[in-house]
Each structure stands twice: as C-alpha cells, then as structure tokens.
Length: 518
Image (tube, rainbow, N blue to C red; front, side):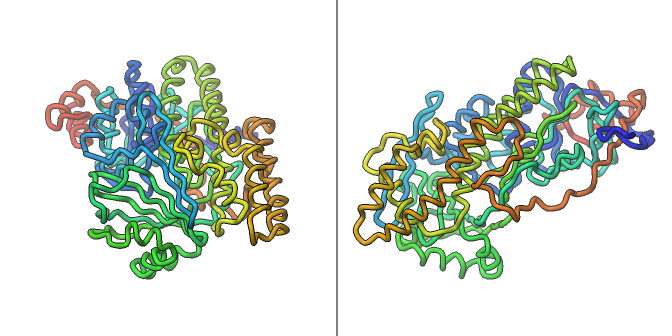
C-alpha cells in the first residue's frame, strides 16, 4: 500500500539548480515575515518566496489593535510604519441608534493605540524588517510544488521568468493565504471544521470630511443588519470605511459601486453624517468569500501560518494580529528545534494547538456576528451593560485581552435579559425565544473551547453549513525532491552580486548571472 504522504511514483527531477537552507517560507506578508524574523535572528538560513513584487495591496480590513501593534514592535517594523504618519486610534466606539459605547483600549507592551495602514504601505515595511533581520526575501517567485523525501516535506520547487528552481529545507512554512498552494500540496486544503459567513465585505479609502480633526477611534456603526467600520488610517486624515453587509449585497456593489455605496449610507443617518461628505474616494473593493475555517496546520516538515491555516470573520479585526503573533511564535518554536526532525514536528504540533486555543473563542464570536440581522432587543440590552464607562470591557474582545466568554459572561447576559424583559413595548415572548435559540451557541462554543480537544470535528451551534473555500488549485503532486548533488547556486557570489547591484539579496537576475559563472 502506498504511503499517502509520499509520491506514489517518484518523478525524475534533473537539470534544476538546488540550494539548501534551514527554512523556506512561502508568502511574505504578515505571517511569513513574522516567522522569518526570529528564525533569521537565531542565525538560521531563511528564504522567503512571494509571487508579488512589493509594494502591493491585498484584501484586508487593514486594522491592528494594541495587541497586534506590539507585534510590529517585536519584529522591528513599528518605527518605519509610524514614520508614515498614521492616526493612532486609542478608542473603540459603537453606535447603534440611541446606543453609544466608547472605551479606551487596554495597553500592551506600553502601546495604547491601534493602527490602520494600507497593505501596500505596511507589507513592504514588513518585508524590509525581515531583510534587516537577515532573511532572504525573493519577490516574483511562484511556488509550484512542495517536494518530499521519505514522507517528509523537504523543500519547494518554484518558478521565475528565468526558469525553475528548487530549495531544500528542514521546514516548509506555507504563509500564502486562503488560497494556499502549500495547503493543497500537503493535502490540507479542505478544512476539518468551517462555517459559512452570512456577510460580505466592501471597502474603500477616502479623505475624511473631518480631516486631521477626525476622532482617534475605531468606530462601529450598526443599522438594519449592516455593520460599518470607520477606521482612521494613513496618513492622518485618510480613512478606511468598511461595510460588513449581507453577502447577497456584494453583487450590487460590483454592478453599481457608487449607487450601492450611497444606499448603505442612506440606511444609517449617523454613518452618513460621519462620512457622507468624503472626497478623493478610492474604488470600492469587495468579496463574499469569507467562510471561516480551521485547516490541519502542521505535519512532517511543514506548517501553515496565517490565513493559510485559519480564518475568521474580519469583523473581529484579529486576522493580522493572529498572523503576526503566531507567525512569530512559529518562527521561535522552529528556531529552537530545527536540527532535530522529531523535536521540530512535536514543536509544530504544540504551536498549532496553542494557536487554536487562543483563537477558538474569537472564531465562534465571529461566526455569531456574521449573521446580518438587525440588532435585537436582547442584544441591544446586553450591549447597554457596557455603556457609560470608558474602561476597557467590550474593547477587550477585539484587543484579545480576555476571552469573549469571560467578557460577555453569564452575569452580564442575565443583566441584559432582565433589562430586555423590563423594557417598555418589547415583545417578551420574542426575547425568550431568542434566548432559547442562543443558548445552544453559548453552550457549544464553551464546550469546544474547554472540552472537545485538539482538531475536534464535533459540530457547534455557531457554525453554519454551506461553507466553501473553493476548489484546490490541483491535487497534491507528492513530487520527490531533486538530487541534492545537482548544480547548485553559488550562494556567496550570488549574495555579493545582488547586494552590490540592488542592496538586497534575492534578485533572480543576479542569481542567473551567478549560475552562469559555475
């Protein structure tokens, strides 16, 4: 019987240049660069490959709360990011009709503000930080296959306009997003648990009508099932506005972007007053591909970081934070164990378990928030228990200072229920029916976090069927690694040539010149 983790019929690999490093990382955005930095600082040879040439944009909420901003500081990118002149948002506000909540963010590592940096500005500085740490980041490199030896991932084959190359490594990290080629290659494309998202995502940048006097706060506007985020950005005076709208509205955003945008503003007078007079607006970008999921994220010689391994509703504002934090923790775990395959695999599994433990609470919260429904009397009553104080409580759910269950706890839920039942004009039977419907979600989310165990596939009431992550780009190739004795790149000469001409390593034209000198 064939080993499912090995090539059934090894393919012959010849005539390709092979180089050997400690770690190869596919993807040079948040998770990939965050993993590269501690590995490079530990003296490990790290190559990061990305199909993009930076600076380049990507679909994202672009937001980091203080818990995430501290990760930029740890990887050495924060100083250059602050030099861009972004707004430092120190508050979270929520407006829903006559309900208003305003809270100051809890500091982390002395950082008491959030940032919202356009990804074409942010990610190029993450790449720069990885290079400064000693990682070899190569752009315009398209990874085609993971290569294997004895059932273990031992590198990748990638292509540039100059040809095909192979890198062998003790660890392959896939940090290449939701449509991860590495996930497909290691046969982890299909999530072991997932949930359909009822919301879509449409956003644009604009010049804030309030200019540099705009409040330094991340603002949430809720009305008629739509949830809008107003996020002061970079430079100060520029703002990102995001509509987390019903998924079926995305078709209208694509067919008539300006008309649909105005219609959303007209649904919420408070939002219209806030940004209705905006100018210099970018084009509207949108997606309805937002199913939340967990993929198996570690195996013999490989790991999946960032969105490649786990994704949740963007309304939580935690995607980049998790990619940066668990990219860093993955790099730290690998740096300490890279020379011992068994210890490395155990460390990768422990890292995945820790990631899941840290993210499960927010995953279920995001699933519940992805129902595009008007705020019910019960939810409004629970939210009112947060009003009247600027001390961090509701904001801790976004800032990950505490679990969602410890913030929206049974005591707070009981206070909200009592308030809802005693509110004049409320349909009490409807409130009780909602409680009955919400209880299974509360119970199963806590059960999953506390009892179900690692990589559990036991369903929960917060998860909805009908999810999709699309089809894998192709089945796993299980390609056998090339002969390591094949002609290899003259690495010192290549680095000297690349640094002399461009000031960075990784130029494929210089790589070709160095090979011709063999």
